[in-house]
Length: 421
Ligand SMILES: *Cc1c(COP(=O)(O)O)cnc(C)c1O
Image 1: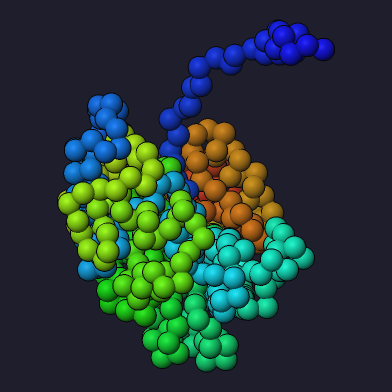
Image 2: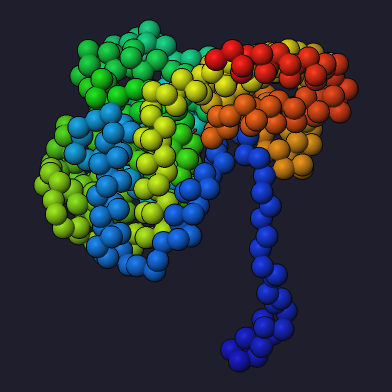
C-alpha cells in the first residue's frame, strides 16, 4: 500500500468530533474546587503575549512575592511549577538521587503515590530493572499508617531514630482519608535527627493557617493549583525550597531539566540565590496561566489566610454535623473535606450513592483506596447558600437510597449553626 492510499483510508474513516461541551457541575469533592469567576475572567481576558513579554514577567514576579506571603516564608526559592500537584511534588523530590536513604509515611492514596515517586527516584538501575513500575529499593523505608488514622509525631520520631535517613517525606493533609498529620512533630523529629524533611502540602496550603518558616527542618514544600489556592487546574503548583536543599542541589546536581529546582526558578527571576531583574527562559510559560494564577493568589490574600482558615473550620463543622445527623460516621479531621461511612443499612452502597450524585452534577467522591468511604468537600463553598445546597443534595441522595433522613430538621439545625456566627 502506498502512503498516499493509507492517508486517504485514514481520512475516510475518521470523523472529527463535535465541539466539546463540558457542563457546569458542583465540585464538592477533595479537589478541584469550584473555580472562582474572577480567576476564569483573568484567564479569558489576558491578551496574546509571549513568555518573555514584560507584563507576563511582572505577573510572575508579583506572583512569586504573593506566594512567599501564602507560604509564610522568606525562602528565596519560592515559585510555581507548571502543571498539577504531582508536577510540584516531582520538582520537590527531584533532589533525591539514586541510593539516598529516605523514610516515607503513608496513610492514604496521595502519600502512597508520594512514596512511589520517592522510590522511583531513589532506585538504582538494578532496583528499576527488578520492578520497573513499582521498585522497592532497600534504601527507602515506607512506614504504613492505617487508613483513617493520622501520622503522629511519635511515629515519625521512632522511625527517624531507627533508620537515620537523609530525607523524610510526609503529606501534611492526606486527602485520601481526610486526615491531618502532625507537622510540628515531623519537623521536631527531622531537626533532632538532622533529616531533610519534604512536605506534600497539596491539600493544606490556602486552607490551614500556617507559616512554613515555623518548621525549619522541613526543607521542601509542594502544593497544587486547584485545592486551597483555587487557581485553574493544570496551571501552577507552588513550591518552596530552603537554602539548605538548594545548596545541596548546587553541589550534587539533579537529573531533571523540567523539574530542576534551580533552573526552573530562573524564569521567575531567581538566580544565584537571589531575586534578579531579568527572567531567563526555562519554558514557554502561558500568559493566560500567569494571569489566572495571579488572581487566585490575590483572592486568597484579600480574604486573609487566617480568616479563610477560620471560615473553612466553621463551615466544615456545619457540614459534619449535618452528615452525622443523617447517620453517617465521620472519620476525617481536615476542614475542607468530610470523609464518612454510610449508616449500617447503606453500608456497601457508597459507590452507588456517589454515582447517583455525580450523574446529577453533584460531584462528590468515594475514597480511591480501601476502605470505600464517601468524601464531600467544600473548596470555595464558604457561604451559607453553598453549604445548604451541598447538605440538601446529599440528604436527597440518602433519602433516594432509602435512608430515614429528616431533611427539613437537618437544614434547620444547619442554619441555626450558620446564623450563630
Ligand atoms: C490532590 C493531591 C495530590 C495530587 O495533585 P494533582 O493536582 O492531582 O496532581 C497530591 N497530594 C495530595 C495530598 C493531594 O491532595
